[in-house]
Length: 90
Picture 1 (spheres, rainbow, N blue to C red):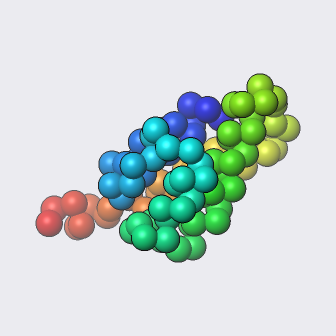
Picture 2 (cartoon, helix red, strand yellow):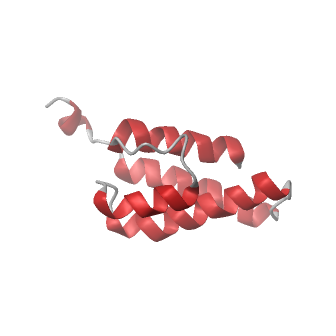
């Protein structure tokens, strides 16, 4: 979860110019409304990052289904927000 969370944070920086890699989840959450991250993703993304924090800092484990759901959320976020080929050409 920590590695996946960090990958998403780097994606936020590269895709949305949102300084996320060195920020807390709460700080990222406060920056989302002024960012280009689609509004539909704000709550879901914050929740996923918070769950990853809980695992990382509590040194805990998530049930397999929860772990998979978080990874699926990260993948969906990237797939839904990456530029399409026609946007990259511009």
